[in-house]
Image: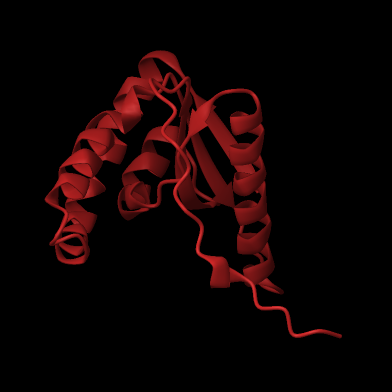
Length: 145
C-alpha cells in the first residue's frame, strides 16, 4: 500500500478534482436516501470541499499478478488503522470512495501511473463530535467451537 499525503496549494487543486466524483454517486445517493434528502445535501457540501480538511491522504495499492485481492486487503487494513490512529489523536477522518470515479484525473495531477487509487481520506480537527450511532446487536453471531 502507498499513502500520498497532500497539503497546501496542491491540496486545493486536488480537492477541486476529487469533488467531481460526487457527480457519479449523486444518483445512487438520491435513490438510497430518498426519505432523507438532508443526507444527500450534507454529502454534496462535504464533497465540494472534502470537509475543509487541511490534509488529504490518497490511498493506493500496487496490483500484483499473483494475488491482487491481497493488495486490496492490505491497503484496506492500512486505511482502517489510519482512521483509528487519527481518532485516538482527536482528529477526524473520513474514508471516501466517491473520488475514485475521477482517479485518472487525480493520478495525472499526482504523476502516478503504476498504482490503483482505493480511497481519499480527508484528515483534520472536527468542528464537532457527534455521538456514536447505536450499534446493531446482530453483527456478530457466535456459533461455538
